[in-house]
Length: 311
Image (cartoon, rainbow, N blue to C red):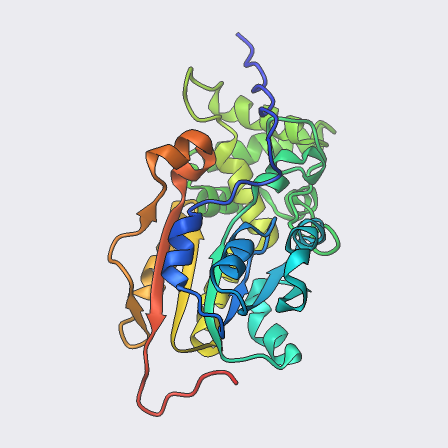
């Protein structure tokens, strides 16, 4: 029996629902005189909450998605010159702050991974639930697309990407089917990619995770260099935060959380605010199912002998 395409996503009441909002604000504990960085601005939910919690504080918002920046600019307009928006990668946060003449900062938050807005926009090519181009770039103005990545890699290289970034046990079979579809001229859209994956691993089970989930995640992570970006951000946070400043990171899958967990365990640099990550309440998950996999870890920058921070 042929596998049916997954149903389209339900219409969203808002372009993006901010996760763990209260928990992030409580972790940062923003002060009126403070300077805070939202390294993944998105629709501006966390930024707005920080600005409201501490009238007078300043916020620097970064995002490599210009569509998201435009939405956030409109949302944060009431805060006037307390807000500065920057188009760029969060791995370059140190350079962005230096160009602005800002530093050190009092807090940094990052809600990493793909946003609901990007998933729900079929033209971005990040979802297997709607027909779209095989793009997957968070910044459509630069870098290679998912299709170009697939074309460039050989079977073994593609299998390694799918295995390491998607934790897909049948990665070699999936890679072969994807390359076969490419060779046959049958790999042009997101649904073409999903069909190739289904041929490799079989149809989805009732109530189970879609068979294409891991492969789509892997290609998106590879296209955007997401794990390298996250590691670079946390390294940069040690330099841009003042002593006593807070870093708070929300992750959505085990690869991201592993990086954050390992980095914030470095006791010579960080004092963790809590040992286990905070997760969304049942109430939040009921209102926003995508919050189910969110994990928040936060830590305070500690002082070292002879320590120097970014200024």
